[in-house]
Length: 381
Image (cartoon, rainbow, N blue to C red):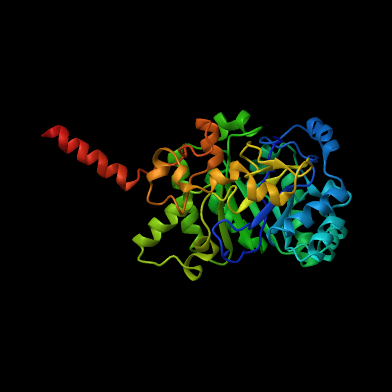
């Protein structure tokens, strides 16, 4: 599998699907190439070599046509850095012309006034920009390029001037977890329509930095509770990505506060669920491989060998992911499993099974607690 995109990418709010497994989002790694060499991604020399296998323009059009045979999901053009692909605007216009909502995920450093106008003219619904710190020192260390923070901010100003809606994405790890509130307020202050946080997944190149960057499960729990508090301030759409246990926390907190979980009280988080890999979301690599998500290295098919529809509807990998009864460990009997499902990528990394137990969740299901109490009482007799 290729290294996954830096961020899952942007998406405007999607409608509640009629089917639990309706295709909502397709993340397409339009190119392996990039202009940065981030701590959790591939080296530039490797990226330049890999981009020789990028889907051609014609293959890109065919992919879009085949996606439309399944439904009308939001299409996120990601990378690598999609803006280094010469035909990216032609591809975007083709998708928009076919009736798809098309968004784009970028590091923001290449956006100038002219390019921002091109994004607007191509019909891009939203652009996500990655900011992994509230200041240049924090962000630039993670992105491994001095000045990338300021370049991203300049790109954002050009997007604003061109009238292109944008969101900010942040990878949360131990270099910036203390800045969560500052990054949230930076997003609001800049005028972002959304702020999405991403919990680092130790796969691909992320494995190499996992030991010194990954937060502990306990710290993740604290961060996600803090993110819930920030989300309740309102004024901006929020979403936690690759953090399915957030949707358990949301329901726990809402219950404790006497609130119903609705779009009015909790935004789009009320009508989505945790891990959507292979059930409502999939990832297409730069060379046509189809994966449940960009961080789960289990290939479900390849559009250079078969149609997208065939992969989506007939993949045994996707069929397994859609069967909640196949969840293992405490995920299998957790009362929040339908809201959460656990991160399938982290489970795979830890257990070797795509349906394994989520290793970064500290919650003990009530059924397990009751079982332990009964066993303790029996031993005491």
